[in-house]
Image 1 (cartoon, chains in turn brown, red):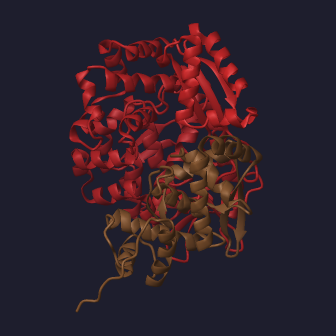
Image 2 (image 1 turned 120 degrees about the horizontal axis):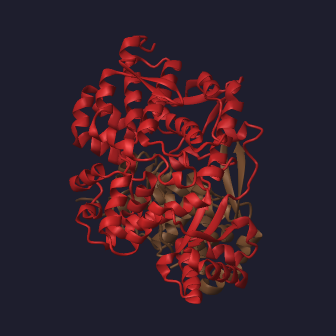
Image 3 (image 1 turned 180 degrees about the vertical axis):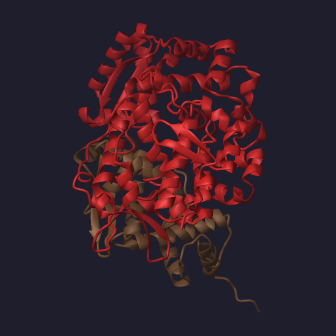
Length: 189
Length: 430
């Protein structure tokens, strides 16, 4: 299992490009945790499962100069933060983390690729839905089989607005990650 | 419209070096006289900072009164109704009642032992579990809710917990005065004068600072930053805190001192709360020095005699060029590896090498993100009605990205040279 700090560096490094938003990072680490690749405590928050540990470690990585934080103003005046690896962060990933835990990093990369396939731009609004669905299934439903409407009801109680169709769509990512299996419920006679 | 009944709000006037006279109501007076509040007279605001700055002997009691005063000034400025005013004053007065001996030091010890500790939660348990609750009568429920969930109480919540709450506005001025430095000063009057309440599109109340107060708030942010750099993160203060933390943790977990055993129980248990309320700074340290046998007694004695540990190694993260070295100094686990290396090389016992990571939690450039942390950034109400965060509005706050992280290794004076060399060798080897 990767230490959280190394898992975050691996996720940001494997997303690459223009950078990864902090909400999407939270959710990808959440999936990585579900796959047993790292560990962090998560609880229900505004945009889905949230970990103060992830937030703290990310801040620390920025302060240490491994990750660059860039603020962008988007229409409506809202601020979003994007994260990319600095040269030190790249060196840490390639010369240390991948050397010592190559197999784990490959599995993290699979999670990142699955998330990208689900939402190519890794938009926070998109990627948070599978995380919410999974949180409801595991934390609230204790792993019991649930219908999309049941997931929706519990999600609403947690303050998350999701629709049946979005939940059904989100199952694609969760299935690809091997986190859920889909059963077709038999109609009552 | 606040209640202008002078007699009611000034049942007694208490002299305060920061704010002049602080008026309290009859009910507040009763609360102040309770053993739970009086106990705060013996809990220093800044733990053992007086070993560095001798004047820093002010207590949580003085500070609680100051917070009440500032909360009241803001409540009056914003035209709170008398009920809101009474609630916010009482919550301000009681906000620190859950603090244990040595304030945040005890909080850190409890976090090490129990994984978490929230003094607001403890305050609510103390209020509900003692005669304090009865004294509050009709205010109790709302005061407890305001302390526990400030974010649910609109403008009142801002005064109790936000980037610009009455707590911070008081402690910077008070700490600065008692410590004897000028860094913590800012224009409180201008800030209060420019505060304003707006409603966001969802109808939630938000406390903002009008554009005219931008410079005053920038000054306040600078004051916080400098106080952290010069006082709160002073290396000798970090040493005394590290010694106290180790001293209390070892005494609670390893010594057979019956009076301290309750601190191993759940933090919300009655036995825990009773013990929390029974101890003050002096009482707990005296007990440890008298009854403990191991390192905790030795550390306690060293604190009493001001025979402090020494700073053997310190390095700002910016000064560390190797990414491997930076990684080794970043997490608790990796710091343990560094400590193990130093101890093996020097033969100094593990318990006498202290690793410490110091971070200024209030750098100028970063405002906490409301949605991310449940905290509220300081918003500036511009002339055009927009409300950007201070960091996007002030010419001074923003952009700058200096790291405020520093790594320290503390040890006994007799081990210092060896520990310094081992720490330097380790960093240079990476």
